[in-house]
Length: 174
Image 1 (cartoon, rainbow, N blue to C red):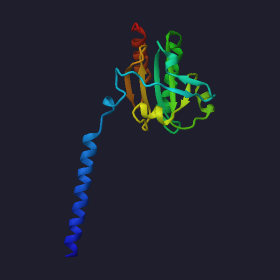
Image 2 (image 1 turned 180 degrees about the vertical axis):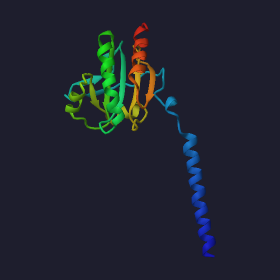
Image 3 (image 1 turned 90 degrees about the vertical axis):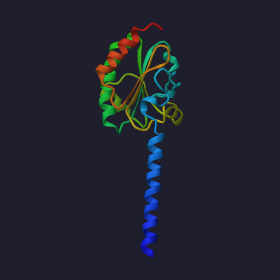
Image 4 (image 1 turned 45 degrees about the vertical axis):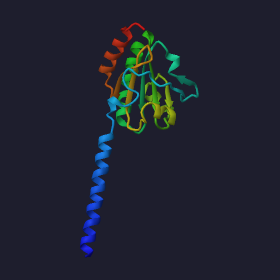
């Protein structure tokens, strides 16, 4: 009798687990379809950089902006930042900007050692949520001159692809 009860309990747990897994997978939205999506207006960002100066997306109106979410504990994030810096150095005077949004506390010395000169800010819950509840980094959004997202990249945004995307975006008349 105890064996039958145990079997029923185990089968019930397995059934509930299977139903939960099915519902989770069925309702999961792929990254490419998550809001904000390509062609959506990029959510506003207004955060303090590491020196306390406010950085906002609105201040870069009419420019192409890379919004990158990253963390100091993330090796791929740190690997892609020098490529962002090289593209930034090449196109800053043509209307390209970068806002690197850290999920954790970043030491200024890390950025100095990497030669990063674009704004680095620390996120807050509002910004993280408005960009799709970012928790898995790196994630990048390329924002066009009109303020709309023109590309979303989950994981590493390689330098060559970013360079091509920035060149195309800068060529578009606002």
